[in-house]
Length: 167
Picture 1 (cartoon, rainbow, N blue to C red):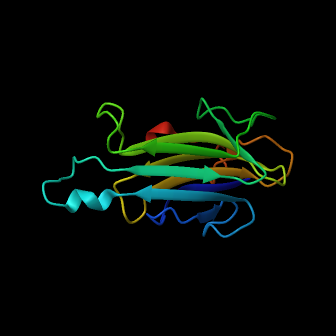
Picture 2: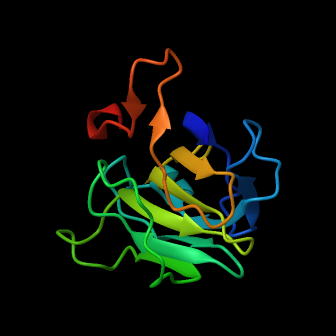
């Protein structure tokens, strides 16, 4: 099991794809997720705008040959066999009604890669950040075909599945 503690990642604001692997601390590995992020957060600096001004933004994650499935609980440690979608996407246009527009998006998904390895991710995207908008914690079972995603804590004191209050 490869566990990556919450890490903040840089993403280009123009939609350029950034690949981040779950099997290495620096994000360079085989089990990659492709992230695409667009944010017009710079309009908040324009005349008449402020920190509460809405702006267009979108976020997409893709796993070619694999996919994502929503995880209902931080305490669910077995990945489903089927039902994965190759990509997930969130869109928040500035003209969306104020009660529906969000600056932050949280996600909690099981992931499956083309080599049949499984993982879990928990993330938060901050559309107003131009530095490191993606904050992500991940678990990856390096044994292809195994769907068990519980991991021992580094001190050996039990299983670590994540705490929703960490976000």
